[in-house]
Image (cartoon, rainbow, N blue to C red):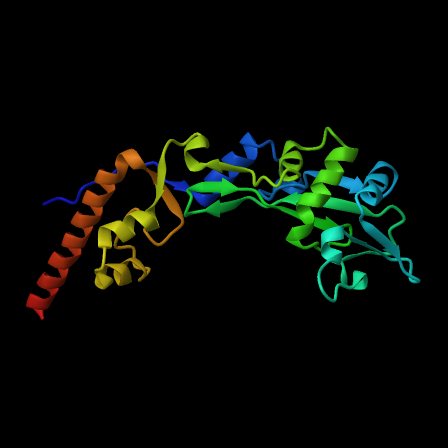
Length: 238
């Protein structure tokens, strides 16, 4: 029997992340990179510093001219030390905060999420617990800031389901193969062997449309039967 030929449109993690960025209006970084650019850069002075102080943020300047920034909740932590916080270098005459989007795959919920990372202009990262309060302060000082910052200020994790990204309803090939193989450890080992037995590849981060599930399962079954047949012929020749 001839092996079934399946013409499928395969989507990758990069495809989903790229579509998510486009729909969420996240710009790419400079130089043609696929990595996201910051959602905004905000100076620690003027409007923002007034809001931060009103909200109880502690801004401390040290003898070397560096600055640390901490929010009220952080200072409730036992043994909290402001000096241990990420620093703004004394070399920066106008210290700034960078808000970076970090699109990530959530395979369990079948969605792409966008937690934020807040860094100093020196590249030091604040703890995640800092984000909601800081995003609220940024939104208060700059009401027209990026909408993801405004959403995060309300403790909302921005996300989009895979089906919202313009590719229809998808399933990862790894999840589908788990259903196909069940408890058969031999099949699982073959899928991880890196010898290209199964196509589409179940061990790579790829996705197929749910409408094509039956075709993919039938194709994997025929590919496995072909392997078995070839091994039997090889054994007879020996």
